[in-house]
Structures are given as C-alpha cells and as structure tokens.
Image 1 (cartoon, rainbow, N blue to C red):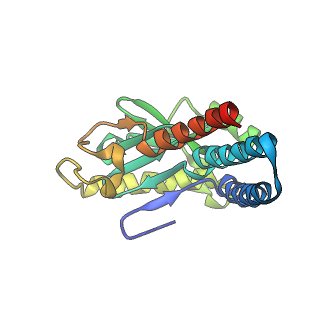
Image 2 (tube, rainbow, N blue to C red):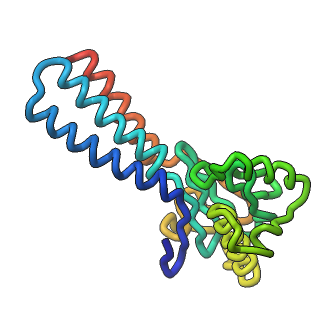
Length: 209
C-alpha cells in the first residue's frame, strides 16, 4: 500500500486470514452472547475475544513501512525504526533482514515460505548479493521483490536525506521520536494495552464467571 509519504509492505496471506478469523470470531461471539448461558458462555466469549486480540498482534499489526525518514519494522511485540543512514543492506534469508551498524533487524511478517528457497538463501548468505532479483525479476519471489524495492528506497532517500531529529510520531512512527542515525526499538503502547486488557479479561472471567 502506497501513500504520498510512505509505502507499506505486509504478508497478504496472513493478513487475509486474520481478517477472516476476526469476522468469524465476532459472529461466534455475537451468537454466544445472544444464545449462551452460564459460566461456559462467559468463558467461550472471553476466549473468542482473546483470539481476536492475538490475531491482531500476530497477523494484522506486523508490517514494514518505508517512510521518508527510514524504515518502520513493526513486529508483533516490538517496533524498530531504522533511519535510512543506518541501512547498510536489505536481503532475505528466512525472513526479510535489514543490516545496520548495530546489527541485523528481522521482519516478522515478511518471510520466505518456500523451504528450498530458504536453503538457497542460506548458501548465498556469505556475501551481499541478490542476482535472482536484479538479473531476472520474473523468477523472483514476492519477499525478494520487497527487499529490492526497499533497497531502492534506501538509495533514493540517502541521496536526499532529511535533517534533524524526528519530533512527530505521525512522521515515521513512535519508535522514531528523537532518532538521528541509529536504529531505535520500543514496545508500542497499543501492544501493552491490548495484552493487558486481554489478560485482565481472562482473569476476571475465570474468577467471576
């Protein structure tokens, strides 16, 4: 998905499955609330609601966003902001990886699902090469094309960098606040809120139902 300021990359299959399960779970939840009775109905409702929260955290929320300032690597429990100046290389092993001076940042949602391709990637991991995509794009896997697009974004933004620290979360995400030339990581407030409310709900149901 592309906007004026950013491009979002995500795993289409898991996102579709997440939306499908969310719809199914909500329909089941409505049915339980309307027709269910007693303790088991409350427990079933709590587990359905918890499953929706889990699907959001694991399948719907994770993505990689290319912004004018850098990359937002949004994984289930953690978000890492990588400024363009810190991006040394982007490739694919079993998942998409961003190489930085501080280490490698791995993307949860963007992964290679074909085992033979993972083994091939591991054999090529001794050097930063990507001949499959650059020489024959028609043979490239979807995540390889994403890596190629992100490398091009990195080259383009490094050629005309935006200066100064980031002060607005809307510009490049909450993990980017104050970032200059090194990756920054954080556990987003929304993750803490979702997990805390889900845990509180399950405990309350088991104690009070």
